[in-house]
Length: 226
Image (cartoon, rainbow, N blue to C red):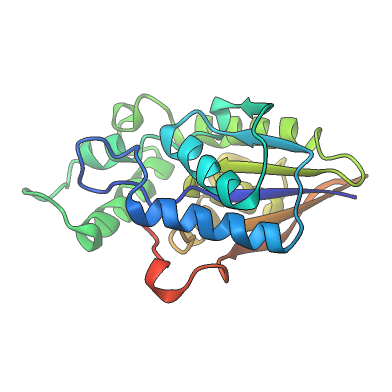
């Protein structure tokens, strides 16, 4: 069997001019995961990341402490997060003023529920519908599992929303319609920690979810969800 290790990026810079930059905590989370993977003797046969800065920086932090060479990293934009900032800012019921993390999370959950139902205008997610998001993540998963032959280990650095969709698809079945995975996706998406690890095993019948949201490599002061 092969395996795929899905890594959520470290904490990004909430409230900064450029969200897509790791915070100091995010860099520390990436290095902590890299140390943990090094101690577990994980040596990837392929490395894939999304095309966002926070994906690249998380991988750099991991590789630094894991001792990995990054000579042949595959960049796959289909592992990118949906435009959650645009989705929230375009939500009709957005309260006035700047949102702290707790308030942002509350609006985020309302906006994504509306997005799933199709009630929220697509412009609020950069023009991407929820169904299109599910489809592209499914495509990314299929391409990635092709790299995970017997004895192979593929490490993927991505985002919470995409990893949560992957988990929901694998629990419910890859052939289920996007609408069927919405509620399950939201449950996964609200609990996934920064720099967490989700494991898939890949065999003759395809990929299966083995673990979700492992974060034992993080001390309490480094555990964040946004």
